[in-house]
Length: 350
Image 1 (tube, rainbow, N blue to C red):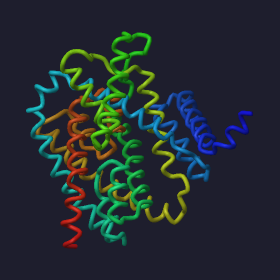
Image 2 (image 1 turned 45 degrees about the horizontal axis):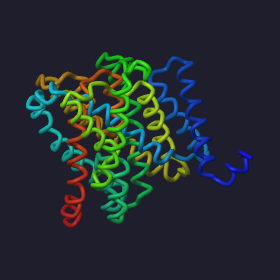
Image 3 (image 1 turned 90 degrees about the vertical axis):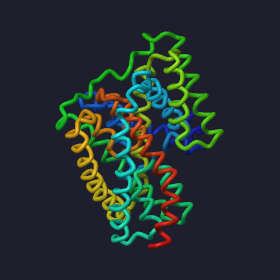
Image 4 (image 1 turned 120 degrees about the vertical axis):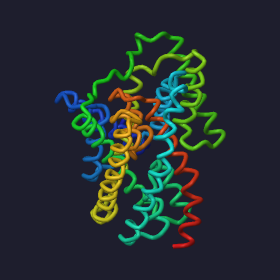
């Protein structure tokens, strides 16, 4: 009965297989005592399975819903103390447009030199969200598959290396408490967070806000935090579930990848990440030497990864989540609003 039901729903069957692989990866990481088992275990297991030719399937709207958890966590960290500290962040926030501009100046010629068309080269260079850059690039006539693999590779490498760098170079741990267990949280706070996640997400979608699943809950949670109604983060179990689904989401991007695509798109993405790392390191070092922010905060704020992934890393390293979120939000806004406009101007002159 169950087998016939699953056979008639191949997507459901693939999702069950994907979840089983992801949970197996998490279990292996836990057994070996490796860091961030619910992020790296599923990510590595799904990546290996995808490269081995397994037909995996992302979790769809469940993964989107999981991002609302991180939005609430980020918004809950926007306290009156963070608001009072915003003027102190002005100098480092002002560096974000410079950072994005330098990435564009390096990235566009790099991808053009490798033979990518103008549109694909431009959107491959932009350090925005994976889905946003693929959609924008595809609508402008770029190669959606190339953009998907290049940006997935960027996120994959940064998410993998950032914790290692944070531990080895900046001496932070990855064991910062990510939240209290659900049984220790007041029910009114859990209910308020669930309300914030759902309503913030759907209202943001209604207004076509980019990154609605994160930004909508984050804005609403920040409002409730500043008014004193919300004063806790989502429960530990919810954050771990979000990590699991992020790991799956990155891994399944490589489903169906061919050797040609590995040689061309993935390798060019790896080299580009090395260029991004050099720029990020330069900004981190300058901010640290000028005493504008602690090293690990500056590092995570200028690591050009995805907003959700950087939120997770800021939580587990104990970095200033408000500081990190403000800088990534600034970067995302600049790229989302500026990339299509700049593309029309720059590509017309190219």
